[in-house]
Length: 586
Image 1 (cartoon, rainbow, N blue to C red):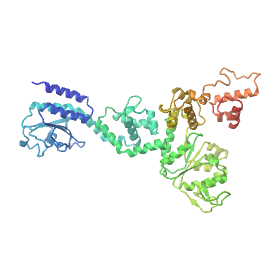
Image 2 (tube, rainbow, N blue to C red; image 1 turned 90 degrees about the vertical axis):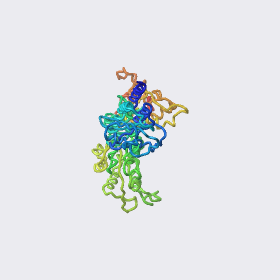
Image 3 (cartoon, rainbow, N blue to C red; image 1 turned 45 degrees about the vertical axis):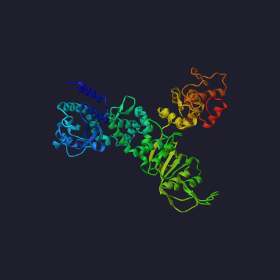
Image 4 (tube, rainbow, N blue to C red; image 1 turned 180 degrees about the vertical axis):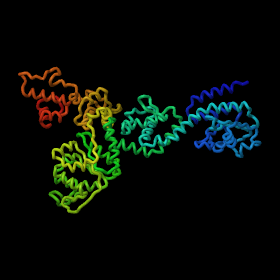
């Protein structure tokens, strides 16, 4: 007995156990059947997702066009499918199971066996010859063994298709899951950490984890303890199907990326406080209610206002912004409501105010807490009545606008003190959003610093050099600083550091002002072991200098807080720092 076919069958079986691509495995079987049997052609037909129709998936042999070859042995294959039994035909002209069709090449004898998965027929493996009676019972047995060796691949792909096919739309129904799948497909083996995923999507940590968990559980995504990647065990045909599904929803993915990178792109962070801001922006953007944005100077309140506008249905209309702190009483009416020619000295032509220009769009009142009481009355009357007049013109006008206000002041405290109207406050603060200060979310410093460097990378990159980067020690130094100027101050600091680093790696030596005002005690001032008792030899100026140094250290360089403790204005404090030669930035 010739053992070579059996040895080759064992080799094929082993090769199939290592093959994950269904199409490649099926072609492997078709080629193996052609090699092991005295056949001219072989073919594999599998049931489609409905379980009714046989679809040609692989063939081997010569002398037939693809179009004709797809129907090869279809009549007999349908009989095998329906009965679950093998068939061996010595002369197709004498057996009506073959059917009446021309495959494009001579067919005299046939052998076909079912491919069984879980006891049910999943497909048919067939071989043909142009000669009569060439296939033996042994050939039929070899073909059945070969079919059985391929069924694990078929079953695995079928289970993936059933699981993924039945759940794919559900799994990726949310924009966030779809976005995560698109990001993971694009990144390939690199994958994403959880923080990376939060940064790219701008969503809550809990939401991102909740979306990734079922994708991991169902085998779409794998997690190695630190990074998420598309599953490496997913059959290639199923992976292609997943890619096709994401491509079908490319517009939705593109819109979600646009919202994050372009509209919310200036607001970066994985801190839960920033995730709350992102979510509030998304929620209120859909509803036309007044928004009041609070937060310290430099936290990015205008970015939040623009994001609300840019995500809202009003995004194609005008976004008009005015800084209330700069407006006198007359200028307020002129800038906000407009004026006609001759309304006041210098009004040489009609002027359309912001309210009118924002018709259909968004009116942004920045630093609304700095409005005078007189201007507060004018703004309140406008909000209550819904109409306005241009300065010098009695004609009543109206505008369909969205109102967003921002302030760095505590309006509730101002209301209690009588410096801000309570009725106006409640008109403005229908939907409040508070932007956290940078010292409240220092975990975001790394991402903000890297984003700032990336933003200005072309300006500072040296010819042929690498992109600017920052050392771990420099990042640690940034985290020790109190950042009274918030993100705006961080951007200025990073810009100076990039200049000093010459476009190279930013280190602690490039952050002198941060090091001076961080938790690390400066060399000047009172030594750490000093008791604080001044000697009789100290002058009044020495005592003042040392005391200012002490308070500056305790307040981590916060000029505003230091001035409040000392009971002087910030301007006076800056002057004393300069005149006394205190080693601190002015």
